[in-house]
Image (tube, rainbow, N blue to C red; front, side, top):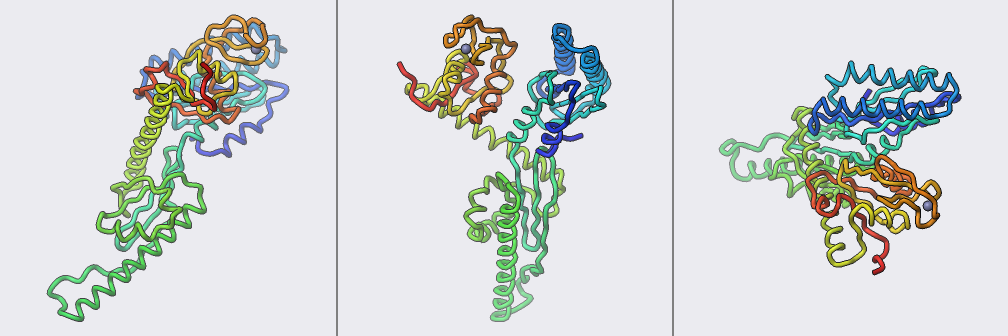
Length: 383
Ligand SMILES: [Zn+2]
């Protein structure tokens, strides 16, 4: 099943597995960034690790059996399906004793992980929902207009309209005053068509919570159309596309996704630029894993910025859940810290749970020269 809405997240969150436990499995299956061999190695590693952890846990025979069955089923699924798997991400939720099994095709590669706990772990799904913009494509020519919704890699026709605007009068067909009168009449009909389309665009944007609007129209019409847009529409308008009414939906989708990607990369680059400028003038920013974790621990982070898929082992304090790169002892609690496989992942969890804005930027990025992680801070760091 395709992952497409918050309703799916809520349904999973409400599934009860008690007295058994839930297995949640996330795998980055993006074949444009890694080989199938690497993907296979990653899932086998996760399953082996999970089996080891399961051995060490104190569980009843039935609960353990259900969790082991989940792992076997996931192994089976991966062996049979990964070869032909097309989505960049896979998520599986399973509780064998309760007969729960759900696989989701994800539109974006998640961090690899396998979690066995009391409930299904859905935070990465929420993160994907947040990452994807809700796009509206508005295509218009002199007679037709149509609107598409594009979300999570899918496209859907929302609405369309056709107005009866005749073609321009050919020269020589009419003479003098009569010809001018007909031309003015056609111009008025065209303006009426654009007004209707602009109003419908406003209504559609208001009804659906779209982030961005993309417009497909001929250059000659743009100066007529643009002044008809409500300010609300103008604010959402982020770019022009080549598609027109009548363009195949799959091509509209492809063009919109390419533009979305380009705009997102520009946003990321501008955020990294702000971070670097702050760092260089000794302002409200920090970079590098150890320092960024320290600021996260002391609640000073305003915006966390990480190179996508950057990961590093580290340590966590069992008392205050503070995160550290190397510290063996928590400076606040004076207790021994425990190792974690990926401290960056823990930092992401904290940002998500505390509603700290988090941006994961795609490589290559200038952030790689600054330790792949940094943060904009609430205050200027103390010297
Ligand atoms: Zn502590």
